[in-house]
Length: 187
Image (cartoon, rainbow, N blue to C red):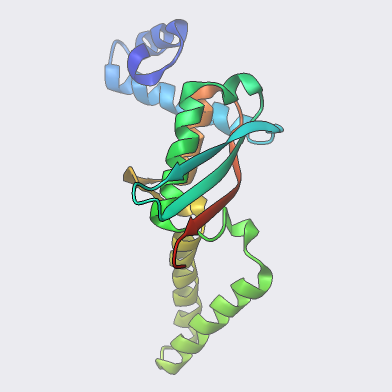
């Protein structure tokens, strides 16, 4: 259980005791406990970190990702460094435009919303349905445009945000993507 969850020995023992030796239930309990810890750490300052990079094998695409954490100790950790590299690989593969919804300029968001609304109005749909359709289209656009909302390239069943949340639970510090840059020849 410790090997699978990276939890402490005492936490594993307690989880197994509380769940009468049920491995799956104990693992789920430890995962939920880790997510709760991650949520508590979200407000802490993350002023250390590193720049993760990836250059594609054809040397025509590259990405830099500024990944922040709370201490230089974690920044030197192999798990954190691997996360930074995989996030840079994700940026090359998935072409996000913004880190999160909060980074989208208001005028860009309004232009997208207006375009979807015009498209739906021309389709003849009832007004009460148009708002829901526009919000659905915006959610889809967020998933394509915002790094944290994109399906992670290694496992499309989880988002980049959930990968970060798992890393926070594993490493015990707040971790944030503060910026990224993607370059491609001919673009």
